[in-house]
Image 1: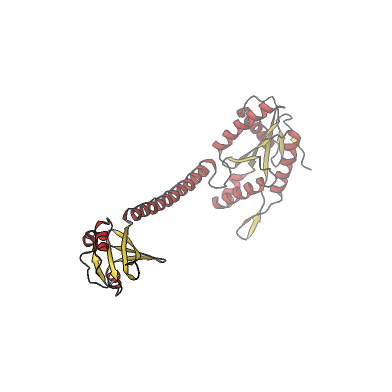
Image 2: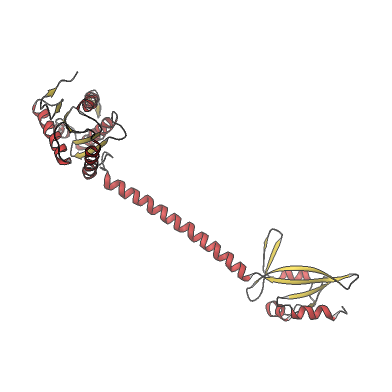
Length: 303
């Protein structure tokens, strides 16, 4: 090609650049291209592309130089004023853009990884929190959480002048059940009783395994009349339930004590529980399988 102007243009272009004639041969290169790819003068343009590592995404092709830099070819038709005599190829350096994209991708992957770790920690924390609040055998709230809730509900009842009742429940002759059958059967009885106790309760009521074979219930915004209705349902359902053991079944009963704020002139959560527990012992003393209210300290007949 007899046009030294294009060569001068190539030599001052900071990016790698070369000229491709009409025979698709590379007829001239600049110094930057030689530094990145070596002397490719005289090579077929297609051969040049084939010889170098490249990344193809869609219609865009990225060529990787010997130095590890990334370039995208940009072909510009060149004419001598009248006829096309070849193409000027400028390789746009996208190395930094590529690095930035890789870094962004790295950050995205890192963020996804951190989110997975965070979610795993959240689930673990939830599990540990649940374990700290619940009884492992029955799945009910445990003794500790019951007391925390009793304090909260007592303050609420006092603040809004609302009633608050407490039920203390004990399985009658539970030691006999364990001794006659086995502890595994005793555990199944505890789990079944826990399920029965949940049935008549509202979402706002708080049911806990107080300890051993004893359960406790907090009934917010419920007076003696309301607690009697719930207590009768509970004692009836327990009495009517069959507990299967091997090829036979047995029945169990419960005793139940009730206290209520403000009727019982209760001052704090411990008094609320203490009075319900006292009523429970009264129910036990009177023959079991019955309900006793602290303010009456007498048997409430089961109808």
